[in-house]
Length: 171
Image 1 (cartoon, rainbow, N blue to C red):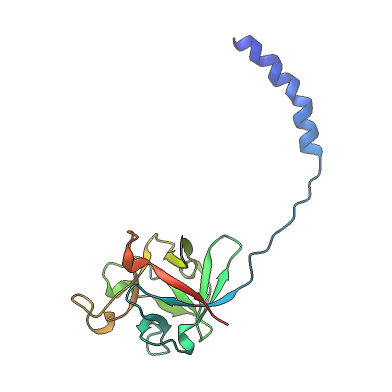
Image 2 (spheres, helix red, strand yellow; image 1 turned 135 degrees about the vertical axis):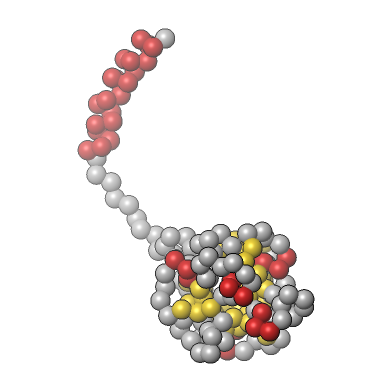
């Protein structure tokens, strides 16, 4: 049976050589244009960027100017979220507690500012960080006191209700 395969491989050599020597042109397809969006958490609140003091994200009951983000679709298939301050949402690396997993904003676009966006249907999305942790919308209940109240973190690798957001396109 082995003898039957050898002539086939030798017969294909001229075809392979012709394919290699043929020049090909490829069309580079740019990512879709960036859009302005807002996100509503499982708790019915708008994800909102806070400024300067700690550059973290929170959830507000009403949509304000900093509850709108520019969603950039990147050529690597990931997305980046630019805040009203011209900064990018960033996931902390190696977080080991909820407080250490709070999403913040950074001025540069690096790995920590690029996310996988899962489109789950009915305008529902989820975001996964480079450490494979999903954005989670906290509340003000047990375990979510102080700075953690209504924060947005990236702690879990499990996609559940608190990790899902409604995406609203904005004008």
